[in-house]
Image (cartoon, rainbow, N blue to C red; front, side, top):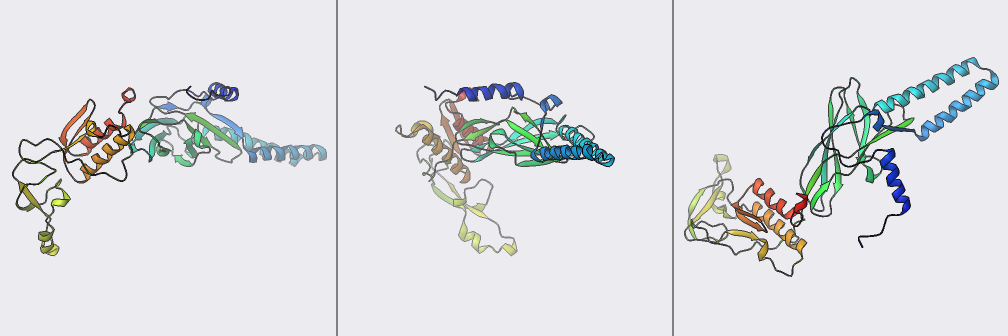
Length: 334
């Protein structure tokens, strides 16, 4: 059993929404909101205004008021104009997906959306939000010939790819008598890394000896002091010597230099983790170790199934390792 079967009512709603509101799969590339994709209904103030027009019309008929007829038809014409303007505030907008930066499970994924207005009329008070979240909470204006960028947040609970949910665009501009809306499912997804283990466990101390005798985990012979270079571990800073330098006289950071015998390289190997550990906990620990090695500027090698990377540091190396952890066992989603 994969779960409870959907009720006939929910199946009816899904079929109705798919047919009436043209809800379909994700749409790659740029999408234009044609008039057929814009839906409009009166709001509560709009219904109250319609009732007021009816009362004004009845009063004008009973008392044969010429000015009453004029006022009634003028107000009705304003309502019709508002309906046209409200629908036109969304129609012919061009939508395109932006970027979605990777996040860790438990954080909020940020989906970047771009709205382009190729027309000669400004678009005001366009609200955006995910359909499942209820009423949209993000609002933007798009000037004539311009564009606007909106970021929507979605909660993450597990690693892997997270596709952007269906988006609803809503507007009540200019008078609020009508509510126009449209739907869009962008072909946009965010990569969710495993949540780093907390509290963090110590980095593994085992590893292969480096050929040149310069390792990163152990230390051998103290060789002296040299100027600090980007990438030097913070624990190697020579604090006593730094304290003797007066910053006003051009003092600088210095670090301890070691050389000598071979020491162990830092190797993050998934196969070395205890067999009794749960899979997700193993991946969380590996993610924590990757972040810790980067923070301490310790070059590290990485092994996970068919993914094997040599000792390195930097954003590209970290991203490759975290991506392998996020998609482990889910290569079909890559």
